[in-house]
Amino acid sequence: MPPAVDLGRRCARALSVTRWFSATTTSDYPSPSPSPSPSPPLPPPIRVALTESAGRGVFATRRIGAGDLLHTAEPLVAHPSLSLRHSVCYFCLRNLKSETNSGFCSDECIDQSKGFYEAEKKIDWSAFDDYCRTQGLKYPLLVKRLACMVMSGEASAEILDILQPARLQSETIIRHVLLSSLTQMEEESRLMRSTFSKAGFKDEQMNFLTKQWYTGVLARIRINAFRVELIGGLYEDLFLSAAASVDAGAAVGNAVYMLPSFYNHDCDPNVHILWIDNTTARLKALREIEAGEELRICYIDASMDHDARNALLFNGFGFVCNCLRCSSGD
Ligand SMILES: [Zn+2]
Ligand SMILES: [Zn+2]
Image (cartoon, rainbow, N blue to C red; front, top):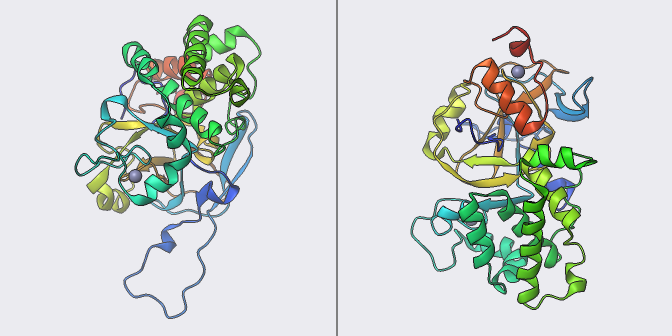
């Protein structure tokens, strides 16, 4: 579990609906004795619908067994931690066996990165990266990658608009959501614009790169980014047990997903999100779930006490938790 100070949920490229998630359930796993006429994989047992009080939520469409894999998800945008730039794949965050010249783990990742990497390579990012490093900032790196994806035509500038917060009406909300001042964000967006400009990008290519765009994207990333922690070899154990807590490795980076962002929070969640060896997120049931039940994940370290959890949820995500566990004072 992450340290309490990390507000990123622990818990790019979904350019079309079909790539939001893979229709993977545990029934897709090869069985020891394959049947002669395999039935087609079932669709994921979930649907997104409005909840009574928390906006959108994800619900079970059928009974789900403890330990079942509900679905997987690929990130809309991901970025490695700066300190791991040369030890994990620049696209999928897989640990590199040895430092490669390319910085990617496979030809497939090189291929999938072509768009943003072509744009990124033309630019001297040292000032922007130094700024993030000295300020201890990770989310502007996701904005940088997204900007390069937009520049290359690989993603739309509005790709994150569907995620919360839907509205950023006032400076108070922005400041609350971002825990940083508008002045700082203005500085960051100016720095990003001048970085592109120095590399010869034209104003018309940077039309989208306004202060409002930067702020809106950063706010959505802050609320929705997951800290990617790889569990690697623990995979087998993990699927055999329905345990919620695993000792995951250190974070390799951060990523923003579409469907996983629609899951609401619960301090006693029935679903867990985990990563085996790259940014492919797996959502797994922690216990038996009935059809129609809301599926929830825990955004923070569930082992913290009531007051610590609620301070973190309020400051980081802007809500007061009224889950059963919090209501009972636990
Ligand atoms: Zn890779
Ligand atoms: Zn709670």
